[in-house]
Length: 228
Image (cartoon, rainbow, N blue to C red; front, side):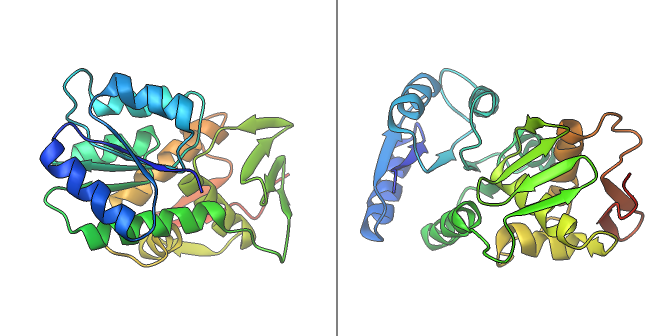
């Protein structure tokens, strides 16, 4: 497996995290600022990025924006910013998970493994799902709309896949958290809303009147079972 990339400017934190991850079997690269993070990203092609937002040369959210222009590499945000608004912005930009300092190294490992399982999972019961003009390619974790590939993240793909498999079924936010985390370690249900908003921005022609992922007010979401 490709190495993990830890982007953290506090060496007193970065090195123990690296050592812990290496003890449990991961290869790790360290970057202390945004510039070196993007350089490592281009060269090492990491399997997953653990990203601090408070970097000395550039905001970590800008790093997410830069990576998401070309890649769906999983990103776990790790930061001292505890405001819900920061969490939501990070998720909307395409982060797959969000942890607030201080944190448990064991929890970080659990979240890394959960995200990697989502990326590596290859269901054998079906290879493609067609819903209206959407084609969901499961082995490639790719969503195509009218022949055009939409750049969804691994987390967004899992949400679309789960709902598209059972069109018309109402999924609560809690259920969708189970889908994207495997085991819910920390439940903040607005995270689901942020991911759905991001999916709609990518898939929908008119986000104010969604065609695929429909809101069930007070409950959650469902995939449209009446597509043309």
